[in-house]
Image 1: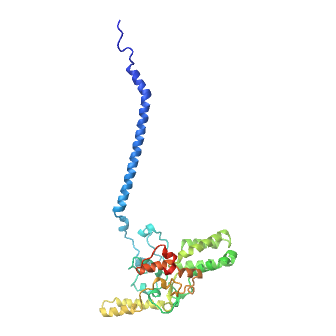
Image 2: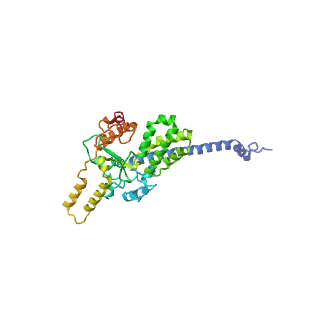
Length: 360
């Protein structure tokens, strides 16, 4: 009897079983490896594209100012600044990058501003210089820079911006002098210096208004035992903090002695002249005459190194109440030379000007 031809051949079910037993795990493993590799490749391609796109955008496309900054309608003009306790809005474009926590005290007896001719921050022509000029305008009377004198140092006094009268050096300046000059006494005999520090700090806060940090340090000093760790830490923190509060927070301004003796009278005079200048019935010749009467003695402002130099400075910082340490810093500050070079359109070189002081 003939044997079937396919009798000894494996059945199809057996073949499929063998494939599923040995081959499918290998296929599954290869599949996941390929998927993982594909994902990595896509990530690398995406990262490369984003990096290249960022490079092209940074180099060839101009940066667009955010719309909310361009269309910002907040006010920081003179009318707002004249209001009591006025502070710039906390979310101005400037405040987005710089925290505006301090506000200089306005001088309501300043004739140049009170006559509505100039704002409390009057310098705006030079983009490069106006910040430095306005910074000085917070603690210098206008005539201190704009009226020149052949006498060096010029007779200068502190004028209280609230009363318009000559006063002693501001309490905050006296406090900083005390902390700098009497370090050993504060360290070795804190009980003897406690009342001096506390009284000067209280007087300083009365002049500049409520400052959260200085007020906190005052409470720490007032409520702790002189010489205790808490007291010493508060005094050390106060010593480090005070130099940051000399940007128009004296409650007074440095003025020529002749101006300081007639500060309020000068305000009335300038206000009266400004009113006449604005009269509608004046002919141009009369208006020019009044303008010259107001500005006749004024000249271009002094350059930086007139004051910030060790060679015959215009202002005697020691006689104005600054400590010898602070006076030395003010008469040898390298940045004054840099700013004067900017003012005169001259080049300066970094970091070389820092090494050569005022002479670079």
